[in-house]
Image 1 (cartoon, rainbow, N blue to C red):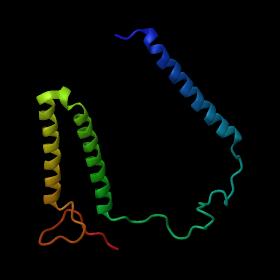
Image 2: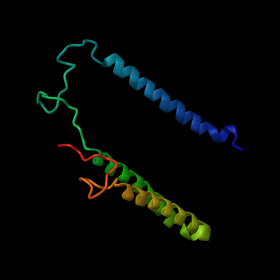
Image 3: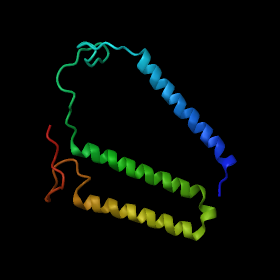
Length: 134
């Protein structure tokens, strides 16, 4: 059980952080411009006046690859963490990491079978995601 003296530094740190954030927000509000105009509301990018819409339709596979990257990046972080402590974890740790990897591989196989990794039109079967229109 933790006691008050152990939590005192955490409380002081939290109070300082919240106070600093409050002071910075107040300073930004007080020092910021109060007048609005049409020109101030326009987007500005390197001195070029924007034309057209900023909404670009990225194909679905772009997002799928981004999600796959995040999933397998997190998987790598867990595996590296396990590898650092493998000698202390023993056979129980080996069983747990094996189960973790098998579950992720089964998910990847399921995604592959469903056609989620195909970028173009599928060959002979229907992919769950339509091909991107250009």
